[in-house]
Amino acid sequence: MKKTFIKRLKKVGTNAKGQCLAINAVKLLLLSLILEKIDMTKMSARSYKAHRKYIGLTQESLANRLGVSRETITRRESGSLKINEESALAILQIVFAKTNDTD
Image 1: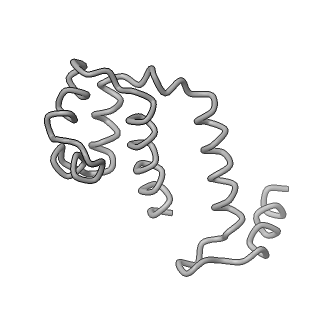
Image 2: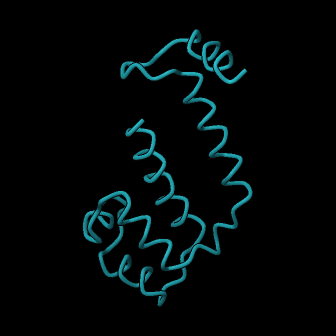
């Protein structure tokens, strides 16, 4: 059953990287469903730091990418600055982009 499903998805087409567009659409749908269930205001400082390390960015490079200071990233990771929904979503979008690029 799983193989048949994958074959049907692959018939939809591929992008420039040869990735199945339907599978990418499913990934985006799953991400949106997950994000609806996550309370973005409860991301911990530890999780934020783990996400930054996973995507392979320094505090400085993440700060530049998000348009904030390095000190803001340091404070988020230490827990002295609360991670709001916008900040959590921003780093999760980068994580998702990296995950999608490695497929």
